[in-house]
Amino acid sequence: MPSERFYRLSEEKQSSIWKASMKEFIAVPYEKVSINKIIRDAGISRGSFYTYFEDKRDLLSFLLEDTTKKWKEFCLEGLDKSNGDIFLMMESLLDYALQFCKNNDLFSLHKNLIMYPDDALLECISEDVDLEKAVGEEFFGKIDRSKLRDSSIGGVILLMKLCFIAMMAGIAEYHKNPHKEAIIKREYKNALSIFRYGAYTDSEKDQVEDN
Image (cartoon, rainbow, N blue to C red; front, side, top):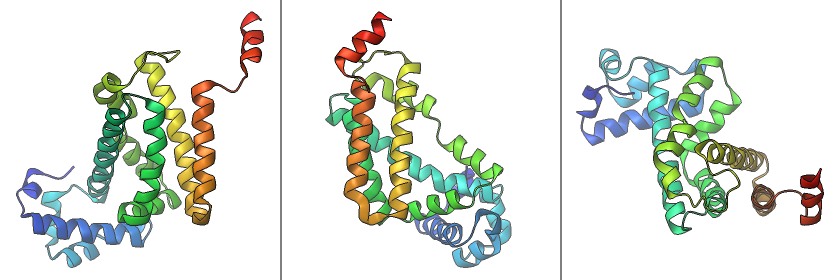
């Protein structure tokens, strides 16, 4: 994460560094990102850059932090609006994600990272998205767990992981076929319905439980 010296910069200078960094990370694969290009576009010296960030991996974490913050805020707002219904929140999350895809450079960044992954990059992304910590500290108290079969933190985390996997599959499909947005939303909603109500009919559930 950026040093305190970075946060003492003016908002204008912070913004110029953010924009120059985003431009470079979107333009080329992670391993080809050039610090020289970033500092030239941002109008800072190489020495100054390394007083703000340790390396380009640290810089990437800074860029991803903004995405994580926005997603967390939206999820918390969604739980408030749905009275803690995790499935309604997740349903609205895909709409938000696809809108995010259309209007935000951060989505282009994530697309580039997914296309050109390496071990250091995957480690950076996994550190940025700590679902267990987020659920435990922020989401758990807002979720209506009264109807969940497993209402423990572990059960909620597993459920959210399944929902997120389905959502990321929808986003990946949108990458390839943006004209299929309506189909993607319908299939995602069907997946959430299965998570919520199960794959079996009531009669089949009874038979399984009897066995």
